Structure formats: structure tokens, C-alpha cells
Image (cartoon, rainbow, N blue to C red; front, side, top):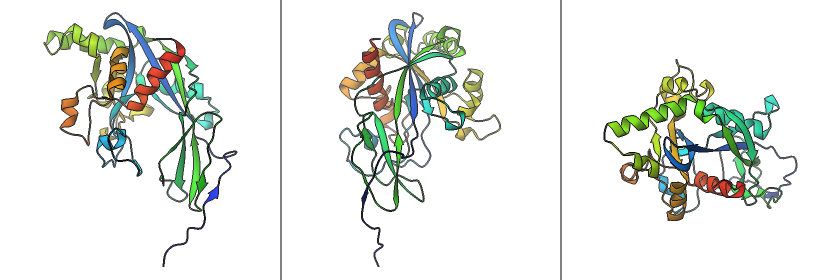
Length: 288
């Protein structure tokens, strides 16, 4: 006998549970790498249980529909969820998460007033909390009509983006990346011009290395925990001109040949949605 789910019911968004997320854009000006403005990104390891090709997640020439489970490994803005137990603001979450994930002290965070649909409404199974449908995008104050089945619930996920001022020149991460740049040039693996044009990145850092660079234990786990639980793998410092080229050409790999060989586990992908928000944020705030 077919299971009776009942009829869908319209939902009033007022009073619905909300789980805000805050991201930080780190604009960096450092002549040691190039005169151009650069953006600092964090490398996120893939969520466990992923079993779909990356192109299916991108939406460019991929089949649409279906539920996307887990994020791919990629470079993106540092950020995370607000902690309601601490009575934390979204700005406070941006400063905390930005600093914890990067190892770089955030001194100020300014909210970027993005006017378009940037927030997510998630429709979840009441029992399992798994998503039952694709996310619904909405702008601030412009919630849309949603109908839920009796087995479903709604979770609002406002997305907040901040332009961050950071203590870059006193950070261990900056010292590390300068050393990495010098080593790569000395070994003949690239030139100073290559780094100025394409940036510098690394995604093979172990937990102890990340902790030594100032990344918070909350983000990478304790030293006695399994290494595979570490969610961060490294950093990138990319010129804004490269990010604009990526968006214009819809190509989001730092090394396309490397990732083409292993599309299920990309290693040089940059989240396309983060590229979009970074460029929007810089333009809105008049930074670049």
C-alpha cells in the first residue's frame, strides 16, 4: 500500500528556525607576492560520503535536479555558523570563524550589503534532517512561497558576507607563504612572474603544521584525533584578476589537468559561488 504523506501546506516563515552563516573576504596587499590586490582563501577537504562528479555540482552543462550531498574539496572564503549559545552576532561569527580557520587575526569585519538572492532556505526531513529538495534562494526581506509535506520542515540559512581587515603582516601564515614562494622559485618550479599572475597555493598541510601556523584546534581537531577528521588542508593567495578571469570564463580550477584526471576528488578547485560573492563584495565595497 502506498504511504500517505498528506497534502502540502503553506509555511509562514515568521518564527521558523534560522541558522546564519558568516563568510569573510580577506583582501591582501603584499608586494612580496605582487603589487596587485589578492584574496586569501582556505582549502576545505571534501565532505565524507561524496559520490558525485564535481561537474554535477557546478551546474555548468550538468544535469539539473536532485539533492547534492556534501561539498567537494576546494578553496573558499573562511567562515562558518553563528554560535547562539554565546549570544554571538553574525559579525562576531565572521571574526571568530575567519581567524580560527585562517590562523590570521581579524581586526574588523564590515557587512557587505548584497541585494540579490544570497540566502538559503533548506527543506529537511523531520526525522533524519536530510535535505529532501534543492535549496531555495531568497534575498533579505523577500521570502518566497513554500509548501511543505507533513514529513518536512524548513530551516532558514541567511548568508552574511563581510569584508575583513586582518593582521596579515604579523601572521605566521604570511611568513610561511613567503618561504614557500622562495623555495618554489629556488627549485625552479615556477617564477616570480608566475606567482604574481596565478597566485600561490598549498593543500597538503597536516594538522600539526596548521596548528603551528595558528589555525584553531576547533577547526582541525586535536593532535591525538585521526588525521582524516581534519577539515582544512591549506591556503591560497590569488590575484583578483585571476578570480575575475575564472568567473568570466567559468573555469574554476587552479590546475585543470590535475583535476580532470580525478574529478571525484578535485584538488585545485575554487568554489564558484565563493568567486562570485568575492567579486560582488569587492565591487560593492569599492575595493577593487
